Image (cartoon, rainbow, N blue to C red; front, side):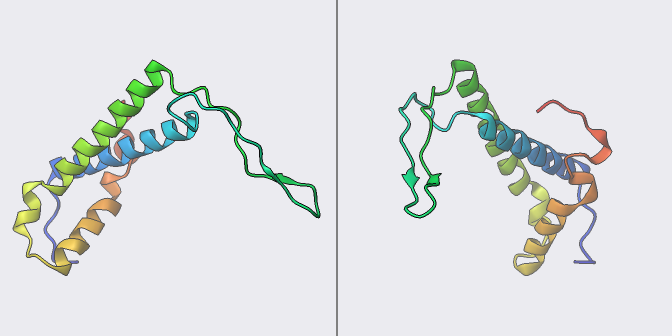
Length: 124
């Protein structure tokens, strides 16, 4: 939307931090065991023609106390930043409807709101 006024700096920074927090949360979740609690694994299914075994899981040791605390901290940060971005007073200055949705999408893709913008190097 070409006639959208420039985004406030605080909103851009909040969106950038939200991108960073989501990326950190996703990376953490990929590295964590598949189950929060220790659980036994299960065998896969053997294909009748190829003998390839698919599916199944190794046993999960569960999360350590540190992993659980970090997962909780990052998820709380993602929620907090999502609320900050979505309830920012700037949105009330725009007319309700497709234009507001377009502006929201522009903010998500704004060059200064990307995780690597301005080399933030900020710890999440």
